[in-house]
Image 1: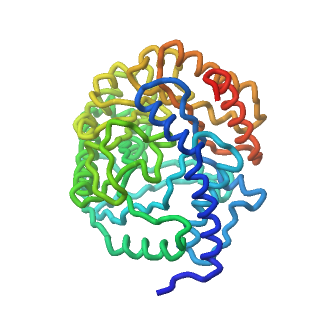
Image 2: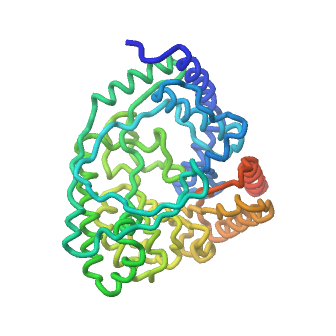
Image 3: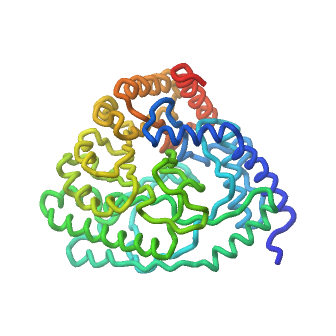
Length: 418
């Protein structure tokens, strides 16, 4: 059976062939080795990456414009065009898997809570928008809305997608299956959308037992969902086609699995965070987040903890987790205080300030950020990565990304050699 026109096949195959050259390049191999060095706590030159981009602002030259007629073909086209854009415009330590991977198909039934919010957007097509949420979990009775879910695998969809992709790619690149490889569970990033941030903070003081019940129910339901996915063979290997929230996932501890083969939670990363609790005390952060997550955390091989919330005062609680490997140090965190506690025990995942990409782009600010990170991490013996993410805008000037990469790579070259 033929699914695609010659027009679509020609476009995708040409893009895939160029992509494959990059995937097999020495630079990609070097980036993978840097990733292992970082996550294996060997120190030295950090893994550097740029992610979470405002793609709506980056297509001034038409490099990202869709040309395929079929929607399925356009999905592959979009992946290759964005990968090639990275390579052509801002080379950091991007990792390009040498195949096109599909996540195994499944559906989750039973979840009934849906966000209710007023949304404000500054630019049509930009996924960065502002929300004002309605409280859907006002009392104990409403917690019944957080109900157990059922996971249903769809191998028939996997077979069809592989067949279609194989025809489309025509040997320019292999198409393969992988399971769900990037696992993260951020209960509070979800719960505040159903209970609001303001009500959550009030209830942590006035109704702590209600907040504990809400949190534990959420964790239990999602733990059960992960157990179902594991039993159904839906968990995969993060080395194939994904990042660990914009950072490198490669690490030596895990057993290597073949693409498409089932994986276990004990052989995977789990990423956790509680951005919405970033303004409460460390003791309350521990009480309402970490203590509830510990049982699930202990089932996974390694933990990457954190996102935008400042964690320097929470690190003493995080250190009690036996499988912690990476800690996020956001632009809002105290870098030196964080590094002094992290030292060589964990990866310090440094996030420079993305607001520097908007307004008047200041190269000196960018340079000082990376120089300060190098100084502090070397002072305390930290293995670290350096990831620019959460980029809402580049002021419609895509050249800022290449300028940022050039500055950061230049500083690191001077420190560690090319």
